[in-house]
Length: 384
Image 1 (cartoon, rainbow, N blue to C red):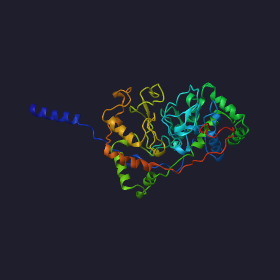
Image 2: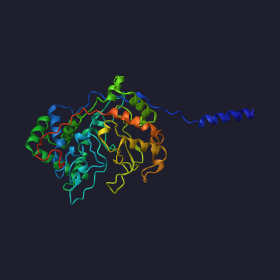
Image 3: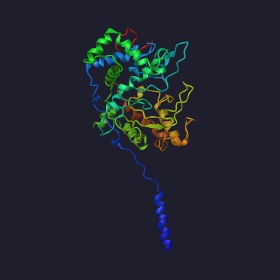
């Protein structure tokens, strides 16, 4: 009897120590984008509001020194992002890789890589769950909810649009007053927000820009077509890349129609060399939001610091951290997210996974730029 009890005890111990079975995500954990955009109840769209938001998006009147527009760092030709590690906002000149600071300069680079505005109308969307546009997570650190709130924060940020000429406390009031004193803008605001005794205000400014940004969508990639039932939309090698994407664990964080769980994760990404201070994120743990994987072809470089040049290197980065490497020396092993460290990315699979990622590209979106803006300033700011 003692022998039998000991044997059974050993068996129980063995079962308790057995590793839990690894869960592999399936195609059902991903999804096609909706064909229609959901708007907040208090900000329904109409053509006039969208046209107003479009003008504001391209008008540097919104910046402290009147030299930076939203479109300075969110450019149509770059998927409404920018081909730079981190952007040059205030006191900058030029476009793309040729953009530089004017001299003298006391403005730093922006803190993080410029995220695309395209498809932000779907930020935070999940399969089979109701979507609330006013609660949509925004920015690398989730510090804003909804495009209406997101649209105003860069205006108040020193290196993005504010500059040193106006204080953070006064910048939005200053911008609103400028717009109010431009007859064309006043007339447009009064028409769009009819019935409002004070139509030009901060809240309506955010509503107009957000309404325009929700028109910037690309919902018909080949992956979307495949998820809607067209089995021929992907090649055999792309389907194999999709299988490997799921098998390696990428979809544990990159899931849903936007291929993002919109949660914060600590990955040990190296800091940008454009700033002296280390970016520890909003919670001090070097955790940043999972980015969407849509239209990656147009939005290099990658990660919050823009330190990874191409998709192959992104996957190599994950292969390295699953092998125990932490590229950022300020991040401790115990801080690393286990969803990333337990991934199983093999070098031989990288090219096929990249083939799949390229099926998420959709170049059919609005790239039109207004010929003029009501302020009379340069469209897109000082980019030429």
